[in-house]
Image (cartoon, rainbow, N blue to C red):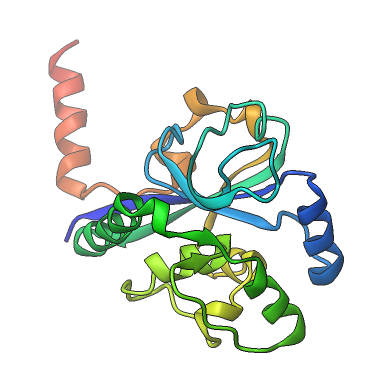
Length: 203
């Protein structure tokens, strides 16, 4: 079965909200996004709709090289899922995107995490709640706690995430990535031998 690679991008934006979350969690990089290409041209999360307005939260497609994010410290991880799982995740995000105006940032939900109180809100997510929600139909992306209690640190601790970059987000080395760096599924023995033969014949 064909595998797909998706990406989780953990950042510290340095905003007041980010600093408050850091104080509570005692963990760095408390914003998480999900991406679908190794160049990270297509990245989604719940965060600031208007970077200059901390209260304009909701569903966003993020520009990792935009002024708001490019100077953030980050850690980027690859994660492998099946083709069917990939289609389900993309479909779920598309449904939210099509109704983006109906969704809001779940500020109250963050308070619920801090107080360990379940607060259910319709059409409202914070970043890690969004990621955990769109990933819930995958076989290997499971947590022992309810989705509304999942933090970026919980996602980052997942055993099958593979770190591919850490540093300033604007310096993400797109052109240096390779199959080896991403630890993509190994090619078959036949494929390797076939390439060796082609290389020898071409000499």
